[in-house]
Image (tube, rainbow, N blue to C red; front, side):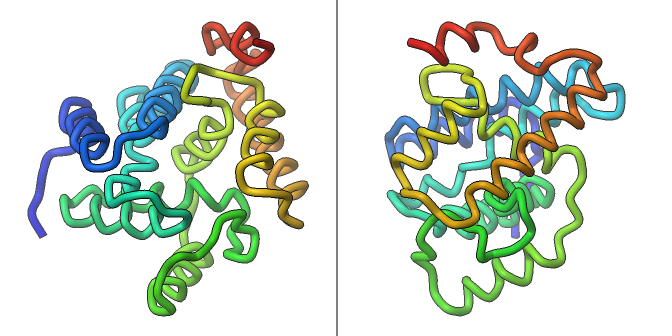
Length: 202
């Protein structure tokens, strides 16, 4: 393992390098997730807006390895752990499990049996904090073209992945997280996402 200081600059460079390996709309999605995390964390006294931005930016970094489904979770985890970025590594997996149960995954486990068991155990034993929850929520607030309301992102994901039996519970949990953050900031999260209405309805 080699250690790289996790700064805004190193995270942005990591994303640029990852996009060269596997170009796609996922890079811009990650940037909007990062901006949403930063904007909301700025109004939460117990969170660092800079840390929130970095963790949001890196949540899908595993896509550097190529087009995949849930394999990007373990690829991202390894990528971050190799650099000593432990919290970012956790979020590479936790962002996909708003409910801590591997059976609620909406993707395909294009991984080995060993990797599947690792993800399963990791999710069951992970201790989520507000950074995990923030990235989970902001992942559902960002399209590659900008911010959107949760419902639009839910439909976008359902169209691409199909309808999974766990989707209603995942949606419910995401709305619970939204309510938690709105209580913390004292207003709607949408007030902090420029262009969210225009982007949601165009």
